[in-house]
Amino acid sequence: MKKFFYAVVSIVFLMAPYFAFFRMNDALNKQHEKASQTSASLYQNKAVTPAPTADSYATEGLTELKAHHLPKAIATFQKALHLNPNNINSQYYLGIAYLESNQDDLAAQWFSKAIKTNPKLAQAHYDLGLIDAKQRKWQRAIAEFEKTVQLNPKHIDAYDNLGVAYFNTKQWEKAIFAFQKVANARPKNAQSHYNLGFVYSKATQWHSAIPEFQKSIALDPKMVKAYNDLGVAYFKTKNLSQAIKTFQQTLAIAPDNQDALNDLTSLYCISAHHYDAERHYQKLLKINPKRAYQLQKSLGNCLVR
Image (cartoon, one colour):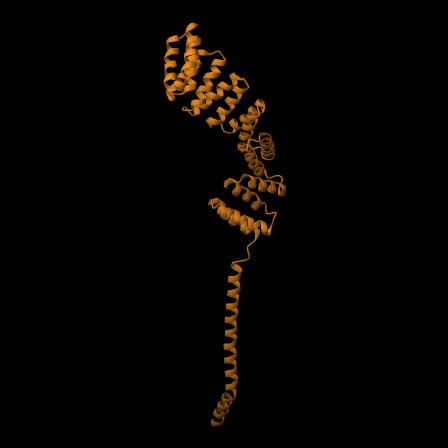
């Protein structure tokens, strides 16, 4: 029995160096594993902040633009274009940033570059048209707005501005077509109906103008210009009583409106209401004494009739 005990002790004693080796090796493995985890963690941290790209700069620039930080937006879009000169978002929104900075020439350059990159970019054509219209380059504006609605037939703002451009070039029928599109798309917008009525008036289509002015007034009962132009349309269609009534409605809203006073005075003269004509003449004279000679002459002609 003692022999067996001594044999076991001897074996344990002989194996002790091996157990120490295994413990040391296990400690080294744990240190290596910890180092690997640290290395992986460092690698992951580096991966969170990759190098900026044209798209990331474009996104950052758009954020600055929305916050109206225009110099920062411009600088950021320029960084994006340095990495990728054909980045369409940066080209277009750099144009917008310049446009909002009142640098129209630079804005136009970048809108043109965006169109070159993507000829079907309707909004860039529209923005170019706005710049041309602002500079009263009506034919160029018309070309851009026409291209806009060709690419995007639902672009109502383009039709609205196209109507204005046609109006300023005295293309009445084309202006009517454009404003009809707008009025149909925005039936509850008083200004849209007024614009259509006004261009009907310019085209001497008085009977078509009247219902549009009526719609404007129904939607905005304080739209003085709609009352005035409706009164003129009634006069042109020889409906004097309605014309007088409409100008009276104008003066109920805007008592010192010279257009309404002047037109109403003339109507009273035409319909031989001399007392009313003289009464409104006195109001006009009080508002604008510098017109005394002209008004006296007109009143004299009225009273002679």
